Length: 429
Image (cartoon, rainbow, N blue to C red; front, side, top):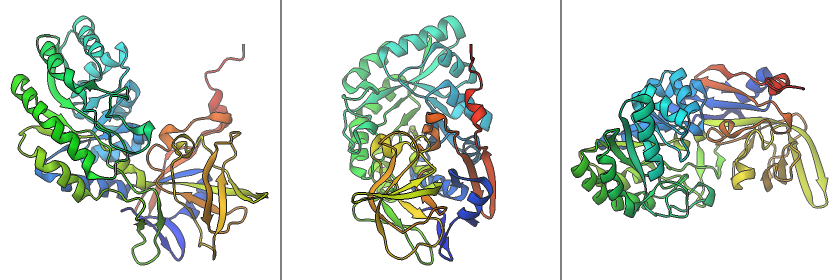
C-alpha cells in the first residue's frame, strides 16, 4: 500500500496536492511519500520479526540523501555497490557497521574506502576479487578485511532477463559447487575475516516459490559454513516485487488495486516462504530490499506539451523523457499513468511519449488514458525506485527536482538542475 490518493477527484501525496507541487516547483518533478517508505520498512520488519532481520536498504534503488537519512533513523543498514554510494550513506548519517559492500568490480580505492569506514563486510563476487581484497587489506590498509561470499545458487526467479541475477548465465556471484573450497582457502588467509554468506537471485519477484527454493538449497551449505568457519550471518538478498500494473482506486481509501494479471507478493507469503527455513539457523539474517521500500513511494509528475494524431495513432507528448525515467525504454517496463487533476470521462488509446530524440522515448503504447489537454499534468506512478537514480542528462536536459512529502508538509530534497550545471568541469579548449 501507499499514501497517494484522490481527494475531490485530484491526486495527492499524503496531504499535499500534486498539482500544487507542480505549480510551485515545475515539471518534470519527482514526488516521494515519506510515510509510505516508513510503512514499508516497518511492515517488512514486522513480517520477519521471528528472525529479527537487519534490513540493508539497496541504495541503488533511490540514493537521495533525505531518503537514506529517513531509513537510517528507522534503523536500516545499507547495501552499497560503489564507493560513491558508501560516501552517500556516510553523508546521510548511516552506520558503516551496518553496510554491506557488493558489486562485481570493486576497485582498490573502493576496497580501501570500505576498510577505512569499517563496513560490515565486502560481498565477494569472484575468487580473484577475494584475493584482491586480501592484498589491499594486507599491503595498504594493514588490517583484516571482513568478507562474505556471494553464492550463485543457479535458481531462476522469473521476470525480465535484465534483472535476474541468480543463474549461471549471470555475471553475479560464485558458483554453488565452488563455495566450500573457496571458503576453506579464505579461512587460511590471515588478511581476511569470514563474516557471513550471501545470495541474491533477482529483482521484482512476485511469488514466494523462488525465494523458498533458493533458501532451501542454501541452508545445508550455510550450516556447513557456519560450523567450519563460525559465520555470523546469512544474507538472503532482496528482490521482493511491487505492483506496477494496476489502476488508482477511487473510494474511501484510494489504494491501488491489484489486477489479476500482476500482483505484488504479500509480505505474509514472503515471510511464510523463508522464515520457517531460517529461524533455527541461530545466525543473524540480513536482507537487501530496495524497490519494495521506495518503488510505490514515488511518482513522476509531467506536463502535457502537445497532442497529435498520425494515421491511426494518438500521441500525447509530455515534458518528461526517457532521461528522467529510463525503465520503460530499458526494460519495456509498465508504469501506470494517471491524470493529476480530476479524470475526464472516457479513455483514448494513446502513446505517451517524451521530447528526447529517440524512438524509444515512450512511456506507454496504445494505452487507454483519460483525455487530456495541453497544460494538464500526468502522474507516472511507482517511480520511486530506479527513477531518478538511473536518470541522465542526455540531450543536455537538466534533471528534475525531487520533493519529499511528510503529512501536509513538502520540502525540496534536490533542486532542479540548471543547464549551466551540465557543462561545469568541461573545457572549451
